[in-house]
Amino acid sequence: MSLRPSRTPSVARTALAALALVALSMLSACGSDSAAPVASPRTTMPYAVVQPASLVRGAAVPAPTGPTVLTVTGKVAGGKPVTFDMATLEKLGLVEYSVMDKQAEGRRVTFRGVLLSDVLATVGASSATSLHTVALNDYAVDIPVSDTRTYPVLLATTVDGKRMSVEKYGPVRVVYPTDGATLDPAVYDPRWIWQLTTVEVR
Image 1 (cartoon, rainbow, N blue to C red):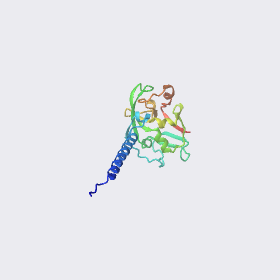
Image 2: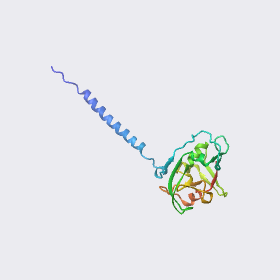
Image 3: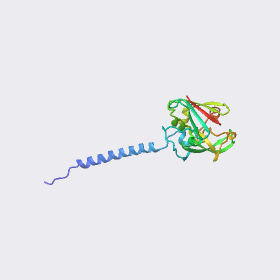
Image 4: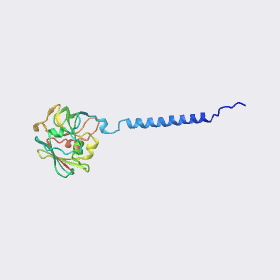
């Protein structure tokens, strides 16, 4: 009597292989979804990082040694105003992108500066919902904090590689991206506040 090998292990191996292929295809699909860009304005409005942050979040912001260019007040960690000179502000990391600046320059320019979201994270404004921004000439406008999560809102410190003087809308200016987003001019143009001096976190 000859013994024939059972087919059960072969069937089991085949079933296991099929299950493995199904699982692999599912994992591959999940991996593709997680690696794909999220459909949000940030991914359709890229910006270039030109200088990584050198000021650690959570660390105390050093007192200005040069002229103060920005003061952040209100609902910040410790409850005391945080002041920045230009050097310290730019230690939060510099990014840049190009936009059509129809309000001031009247042409397409490249702005470089720090992300407003990084400023808020540095001063500990985690519970903020609104930002009351004030310019040197007392022009004021409120910016929803949600804007900083949706768009790479910039506190620009240079335009086309040059510092912005007070006469040239500086030294700090709020800039919104215009590429890859449809922003209602009636709503967003007033938020392009130049000669920015104070941000009150509310």
